[in-house]
Length: 559
Image (tube, rainbow, N blue to C red; front, side, top):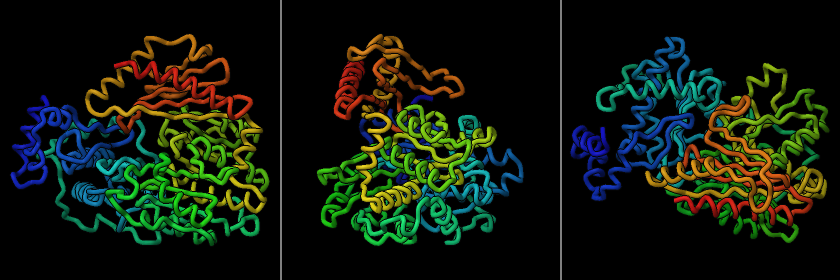
């Protein structure tokens, strides 16, 4: 069925007074109709994510309902035990998030599946923790993470507490594709007892797990360290504040304009803590109070980023790799000092994350494993580690995601925030700042430069151009970049060693530099990761910029 036929089908099934029907009737641009209906919003290992609105390629009650019915059918096929274990559902502060989560709860219950919900928005990592804590068969979170306000999404988890694997996602997709969106969705709940609203003791269990990750306490910390926190109008506001209070921090402020839920993200626009512009208000309040540290979580509180003061007193945004260096170093240094560093310790990072953290881990006798991007892969490595006698210590990726606890099998901005605040207080007691520690890490392990640009290309044409860009690179593998010899190329399209396939290319250069190229799996962009290690910070950045400029100029020429 073509996009025009799908458009007409929606108009015929939706009543004239339905907001989705009115929205479709008001569209006058043929290209807009095509974009909304040329494909079904893809369900994959990241679930669903897209702009909200009417159409098969949009997030709306029809696409959410169809996906949920398909998941319900998949769970029902697993038998009554799976149905009794049930599904836990959470949501973020976005427009329609509560409505979509309630719709999903009703559909699952109407299919005889037990459901657990929260009374209000909750962080993604709490949802991930609750799957294993409650012993549910699955979890669903209605969130678009850090995307702009026009977006929403649907994250699906399985019983291991991770987002669904490719194998499970494929089986769910098969079930979803069989659902007739107009006649095949069941949402009338006959048994209200199947839906349980979780009370505060479950929030307490999650927070206790976060607090249990502390490494240093008491007089080892300067709890008067001044800092600012912003939840960017998201789900982190209450749990992050509780964590700070219970850890005993005494000199911090929250950005008041961003403390409460705001689905329009009025004061920030793009609520991604990875973007330094998200720290504008934090910097303002930070300068007023003399804060040493600025911390932010995204709207569903799985991402976490910081800014720290340099030697000149200026706030410097750290990328995800740099915050990862500080956390890897702090955790290993602390575990070694406490005598709790295991004999076979393991950490996990993604294939596009800096190799400096590998050097730090190896210096402590800890093995660093690599996986594909995404915490379904990073935390999905934990069973393998257990089977081979390793103790999981930490996992992270460059896109400001950190997993410090194997009982929370997704990136967690709350626990990452606790450890960074604790590290800052610990080093302050020693007369050092996080900036000082970062410079010490570079001096000891190598001066790395990190750069992670991306090119945003939306819609059908954008998706096709990204495809042409990747094809061009594969068809024209260079022998040198910016005058530097290419010593090795890894194409992950068909898998590599024990790492499953992904549309990603990695180039290793003769001067200890490397870079990677991959399309995003959740956003309309192609992403780049550039790393260079030299004998000074200035030289590392000069070399890295030269390599990045050379690669990006070629990529942008592909139309």
